[in-house]
Image 1 (cartoon, one colour):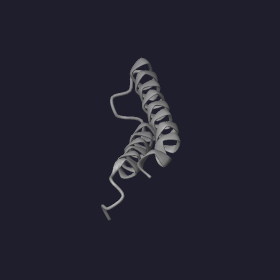
Image 2 (cartoon, rainbow, N blue to C red):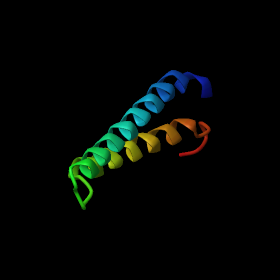
Image 3 (cartoon, rainbow, N blue to C red):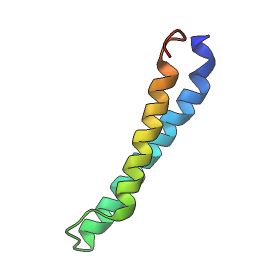
Image 4 (tube, one colour):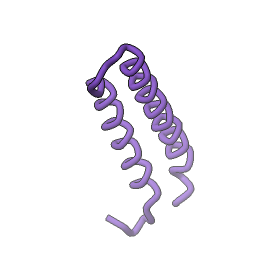
Length: 66
């Protein structure tokens, strides 16, 4: 049963990476524009990435863990 989530977990890993990349782009844009605070959407992107990473970890758990 553990292998049945491999495809979904792989897609989630790609999504987490895309979210991280986009957050970095937002930070660079803010720095280039002379910003001194984190962009609001970067914070949201980071929270979304963390949520996706939690889902990845949940799918990685053995079946008997609830």
